[in-house]
Image: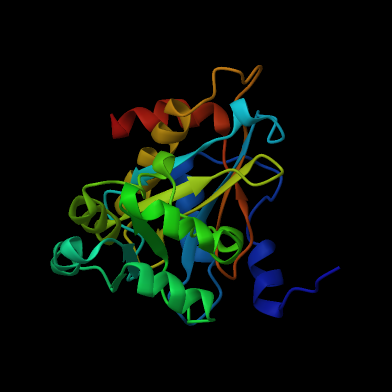
Length: 238
């Protein structure tokens, strides 16, 4: 079992770990409990009432956080030669076609956080499945990363659009911003995320959908959130 540092243990003693807090109260606690000297990331974790082994209950998509994540997102675009200028002008950090695929196949560095592809490039990009897939970088239409409008996609991801997906346990982990963000910024981002996850509920999901939720900073302890209050809170994003 992993041993936590002194600052983490001290932070864990400053609140009731078993009590679910209201969304804003939980976020405020996370800001005060962050022990590191660097600007930690604030993350939300949702436990969903889905069966991740069934294809019709998978939860995946994108959401635009009103205040972004505080991270400089590096975007790669796979596009034919006549679309590369468009992607570059939109702010893409890495742009290329077949030659980019070959470079990555040969062991080139994956120096990007999001990969976007035009539909006609997917035959080539598909060759990178074993490279991009395990890292969650494979372009996918459901995530808005396979699209003919690469300029729009690049702009949105640069501005704070992020991809979410459930893991094999039915959890969704999403960054909400930085500890340095104002409480109102983190609250707006959480409301937008919760609203999107509720919207994305699979029709095949039965019973309670939002089962558990917590928020934490990179190095800090998790704070339980009252899921009963999340639906009302999510209306703020509407």
